[in-house]
Image (cartoon, rainbow, N blue to C red; front, top):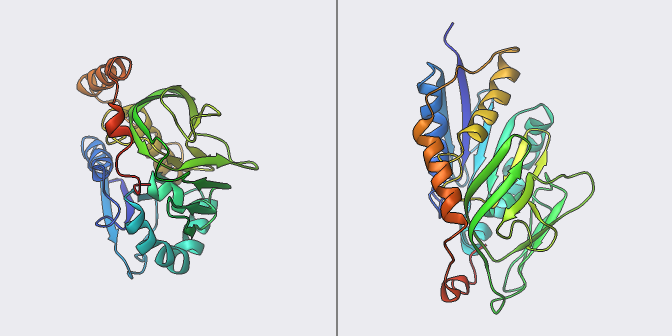
Length: 259
C-alpha cells in the first residue's frame, strides 16, 4: 500500500521571508526517502482551501505589511476550517508571522491591531520601533530533545489559559525574552519563532510532525529510520554556533516593522 499525505501551504508567496519554504522541502524529502507521497497544495490570497483531506497545514512569516494583507483573508476565509482541522487532530506548523496570526491578536509597532483567528490563546505586542528586537541564534528544549535555529521578531508573545509552550528557552529570547518560553502548542498545532529554516536542522521535530500526521491517517504506523548523519551534524554545528555567535546591536535594532 502506497502511503499518501496532503499538506496545505497557506500564503506561500506572501509569507516566506526567512526561507520558510525549506520546511516544506524537508517534509517532502523525508517522505520521499520513505516511499511516502506528500501532496503539497498551495493556497494563495483569495483562494479556497482544497477539497482534500488535510493531514498537515503550514503557514510561514513575513513583515507587518504582508501580515496586514493576509490577516483579513485568513480570518474570514479560513479561520473556521483551520480550527475544525486542529480539533480533528490535523498537524499544523506556524512560524513567526503565521504564529502571530493564529493568536487572538497582534499589535504592530505602529499600534495597529491585527485580529487573529484565536487558535492559540495568546497575543503579541510589538513595543515599538525603538525597542531592541529579539534576534539571534536560539536553542529550545522540547519534550524529545532540542530545537535550534534563528529568531528575528520585534513582537513579544504571551500565552494564556491552557495554551502551553512548545518548549523552554536554553539560549535566546523565545516568546518574549522574559518568561523563558518559546512557541505554543494546542493539540497537534505548533507555533514558533524559530526560522533558519526550522526543520532541516531539526530532523527529530520534522519526524514528530510526520508521525502525528501518519498515525492519524494510518493508525499504528511507525516511520522507518533514516540515515540522518548530515542532518545531525547540521544540528550539532548550529548548536555550537548558537553558543558563540553574537548578532551586532546594529542588526538587532534594524527592520522595526518586521514581526
